[in-house]
Image 1: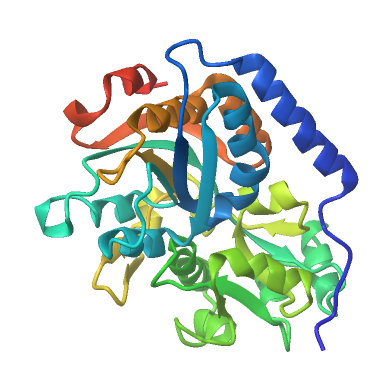
Image 2: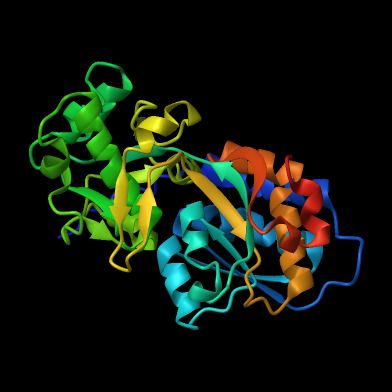
Length: 331
């Protein structure tokens, strides 16, 4: 029977999120340009669900007058839905620039012509504080135990996402392989995860947190933004294996994964992207949302929730970037 424990996010965290929302609205104010109308449909990486649904989305609606409608999922899953004409978003936020390339060019439907890279994160291991192996993770937090020893605990039930549908899924595999190589731990990746698509460990991105909250897994591979946003206890990983440091970009690049759809991705520092795809129905609203997300105040508050700001760069066709968004390049 699933064992429950108290909600991980304390009341103070929820109050601070509410204060942050108010702060955003007051700082940004109503958009002064044209009168806002209609709904802005935003599809985003599932790791952004709490940030988007409880903070950025409501604040955008309050500040702009547009109706915000969001839906989270694995980044590759979102790309598949767009290609399958199941999803027609106005804006997409993905957790890997490589997924954007799978939507670019005539061979891929030409759904994306440009994208901004605007934020970073890193992998961490979140854990259930009531798990029978929680003491091992606490020992890691106190620097009394190497992180990989906690992950080698007998009977550890660890959760991760599908590497074929979500970048965090293949990044988890890379993390384990890098740990194996950097710390000379023969067979570590297979001992930790088994097969890449091990059904006892792999869950949809939007479900993984719930699995841990109900005691069905002891720990999970998450982004820093997820654990900070929800108040989940976690252990940090060394920069050589957490895929969060540009310093180790060459080391990360030794990692590769080919999805079931045939997309081969190469290891790189974690980056989040935002773009307006060709499926857009509310162009003005989409541009307003991108401006909101990239505004200085919103990025600062998102950083406090673990979504770390990065210099905005352009992927794809720079000339295709809407004029109203050019000002953010390089910021």
